[in-house]
Image (cartoon, rainbow, N blue to C red; front, side, top):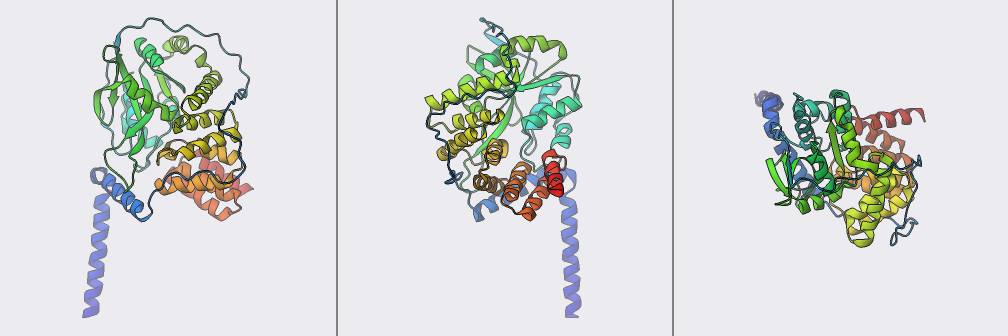
Length: 407
């Protein structure tokens, strides 16, 4: 009798668990509760395994970084385009029509900002249309710029899309004054801690639709804070630096000559990067304690495949300390350390990134490559599979698994 009761109790408990699980994964319920479950899991993980500052570089030989007088040549040695004079006089303000506002769902600022941008041109989708392709798992915390470009070119091909780095306030105003809204990636200060010593720093996409010189503010359709948000020129500049002043332009084909004229020689991607590299180098000289200046220097050096110099710049950024979530959004340090054969440093920062964001396909991928370089093929295979599990369309993980199977 007692055994039957135990069996009945166990069966009842199992049924209850199954029912709760099925109920949780009903779309309306899952949408409301998943972020709370994610928050609780993150906080518990951070309490059990406290998040420390980014580890500093290992003892491997490194080039000096105190005076980074580095001027690498672009790979293709492009001939710079003749500069096109920017307008010297802009209107005191510009305001473009704001698309229907859409509040972002969990971890969805990229898809929400992009759908806002596309709706400016009459597109009829929403953030879920973007997320279903770029991040079908809601817990995926990042969509990078290249993925946004991929979406537009494959799902809104009647529009052109370009991105560049090294933007500034004057360029944003010039674009807006000529009827072209802009999307930027910037720092974001969160309003709740996801672990006990959370530094509250994160990345955020911002759709900018206007400016006003009288108040020295931009107008943003912020998918988190709300429509028509005023952001001061200084505030945007400070938040923008952490992402190398990257900006995304979407426009109809008939606007391309206008865009080319406004960008001038920056229309050439290699020239744009060369200018951004020099600006970052100058920033490290004028603000040697600015970790973002050093990080940007490393990222622009990675573009030119100057991996040893890039690794040294990232060493300095690590020594100064950059935000806990930085490697959730930007992956230049992984690329630099891998190609500079700094395997110990690659392993260190990849483990750090995975501890903070376990479902980051990029961090899993680079942790796999660190294991591969260390001779542990089994661990590499495991990490590559995890990367593909977290993003089943991730081409770098597909390549890594194919490489491992054939080498």
